[in-house]
Picture 1 (cartoon, rainbow, N blue to C red):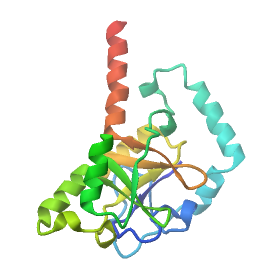
Picture 2 (cartoon, rainbow, N blue to C red):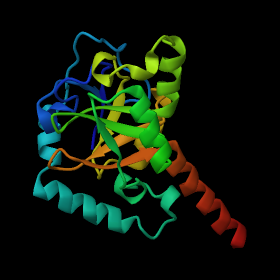
Picture 3 (spheres, rainbow, N blue to C red):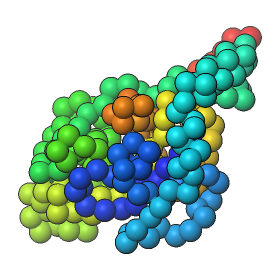
Length: 211
């Protein structure tokens, strides 16, 4: 259930964790970064654990553990799978698309995050805040720039079984407001944003108020 952070980089090939696509990325296990982001290289530190965590026995154990905690309110559960709060709808665009096209897609679907793909591989995750900041810093003809020629920001990835509480702490620690959920086949299964957490705790607040 470890969470991974992919280093900043251009959308070439795949930028998913090694456990999914063979790409070397940094493993995140604490609330603060164990080392500064290195754009030259990164590494997985618990590949053996990750292989074990995707075994059938592991999934059975997590299901039993999760069901035992389901009598508690969702936001108070000791184990809250990311799959229970993530948004399954994902919008993507190819790395060859321009920043103008990215803004158009976001506006058309009312979303703030897009998955960037390169030859059907996940090559990045961008959000509206990053996009607007890049446009502000590179004003001359910036809208016509292709994503393929831009260093995309770092992004977090997690599995559906990742503990949502741990993911929230790491999103805060790395100052990222979203994480991409990846299934066992290495395909995007959803996205978790700060808005999902706000909805979760707002719903909990309403329930407590009714009681």
